[in-house]
Length: 199
Image (cartoon, rainbow, N blue to C red; front, side):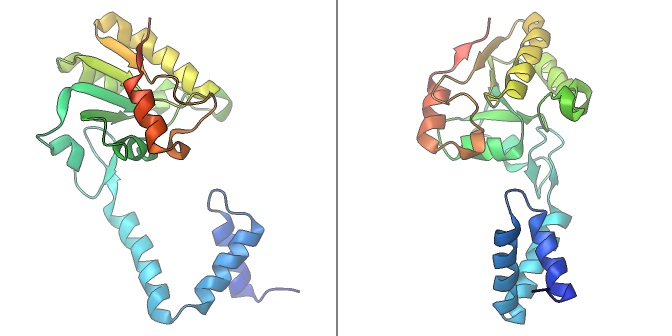
């Protein structure tokens, strides 16, 4: 059966979302069509509002409606410890544990030559500036245990080591190949507790 053009277009747009295949996209499209106009407008307005209002924090590169973000301006955070993550979703995963009380730096991805992402495409210069300006006790590299995550960790360790700061990585509570956003709170909490210094 052929879909009417507006429905086909809606299905195609849903299919562009990560992890959404043709059947899920079809289900979502039919779900939207079955909602009343007020609900659909609420959804559309939420998407537009999020896109308009959310931006990158100029300090840590997290996403927030405020600049600097809520974490950077909080007086209860330990500014002597910085946790380096690849994406805002990883920061959120760590925050869910309620174990970490320091500040963050979001790289905006991982080094991946295959995808054309080198150190210059990430916020590594900003991280270096922050580390050299601030009197830090520890830099935690909380990156995925994928090949790209390991490559990024090695690169960061190499350029940060000369600054004489303690550099640690998450403990091995995370299985190899795990993406932080999919790990449960307890696993991340244990990985934070079991972090080790990178030598």
